[in-house]
Image 1 (cartoon, rainbow over the protein chains, first blue to last red):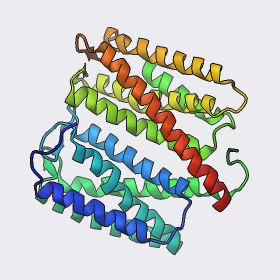
Image 2 (image 1 turned 120 degrees about the horizontal axis):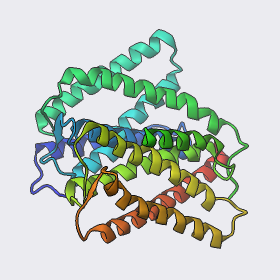
Image 3 (image 1 turned 90 degrees about the vertical axis):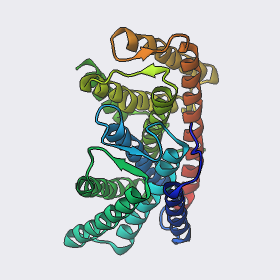
Length: 169
Length: 155
């Protein structure tokens, strides 16, 4: 894998975003078992790497990430450390505040606005180099991603509420 | 169509994974296997060019279905064998070998059916990469099981 020849603004932006996200997650009081949080983490790692492959890959080629079209260490860092904490915080607060109906719509739209603005900043810092992609496309994309995250939370939470059925050691 | 049918059948079969795997493990292992498969695919295709994927949209989606549907589903089944308490180690090793052999045969077949081109002299390196992938996934599944056993007492 490729390391950047020098740490530019885009790498500093990713490092700062990852550090802030991890700090927030670590300082939040424990709400879910680690095994449950790990599914949220894996799901967002999966979404990030798969969507980037679809959208930035050779077929659609709508944007490049970081300094080259190649797969860099900072790409992996972004998939593993930058995106998942945001989604974890989203589902954490959704669960904590027990949102329903219109509240959920407003909550998701708020997150979508926030992350679209952050993506705009990330593009300005040089993390994303848009070719055919437009920032307006990110709005529906994040909406779907966050709704799926909430649906996943609703689906997997009962798996951890029941004591029976967990594997024996 | 063949790829879509095979992947759909395999993903549907995950509903019948034995009790050796907790449903949360099925979720986690499938998602991780898919993401890690993509990580390896990025290295093989984008950085090292050991595998060249044709740029046609249909072929692209067939390759993606294999990477994101077929391989992760097979990994979940393999993990269920490894975590089954009544299967002896020798059989677990045999199933893993068969799994690996099937994937090893599958790589040249991808080239044969026109879904990929293998860089000459790199087939053995690709096999090593596949072995690393299987080892990584079994390790990740085992670590997750440790967390799950812990959650059993705290959830």
